[in-house]
Image (cartoon, rainbow, N blue to C red; front, side, top):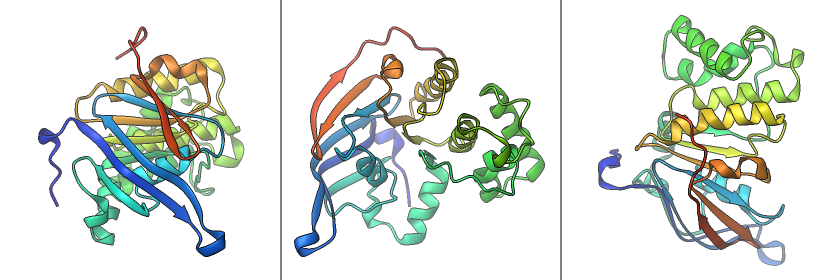
Length: 242
C-alpha cells in the first residue's frame, strides 16, 4: 500500500459520493452525489443546518462509514480498494479524529488518553506520555494532565480528545464541532494549533462547525443542504498563526 503524496495536491476527492441508510420503505438517502475536493495544506470547513449530512460526510471521509456509491480518494488512495486491515492501519497512521463524543477511557489520565495513538503505534510509554503532556500544556491543560476524565469539565475533556487527534501528527485531521464546548479564548487557542498543522503541505484539516467565530481560520468553506454541497467560498486569510 503506497500513498502518492507527491503526485497529488488533494487530501480528499469525492466524486458523486452517496450514502444511504436502511432499505425499502425505510431507505434514507443522506448524501446525494457529493462532489468535493479538499486541498492539502488547507483548513476546509463544512457548514449547514443540523441534519444536512455534514457529519455523515465527515464520517465517510474518515473511513468510519463506507459510501453507498460514487468514488472516494483519501490521500491518494481509495479506501474501498483496501482490505479491512489496510484500512485500519491507514487510519491509524494518517488520520486524526476529534468528534463531539469524546470517547475518553475513564481509567486513564488526561495524558494517557491523549497518548493512546502513540502507544498503539508502539512508541515507548515514557516518550508518548512526555509528548502528550507537552501538547496538553499548549492547549491550556498543563495543570490537569494527571486528572481522570470524571474530574474534568466538558471543555477540558474536549481538549484531551483534540490532543489525542493531533499527537501522532496525522496527515488528515477531521473534526466535528471542535470548539462547541470551549469558550472563545480556548477555541482560538485550539484553532491556532490546528492552523499550525494545516500549513504543512502534506496535511489537511476538515471541520464541521456551526461556530462562526472560527470561520476566519478557513481557507475554504463549503455550505451543505439536504445532502448536497450548495455553495463554496474560498477565503483570503486575514489571521493565520504558525
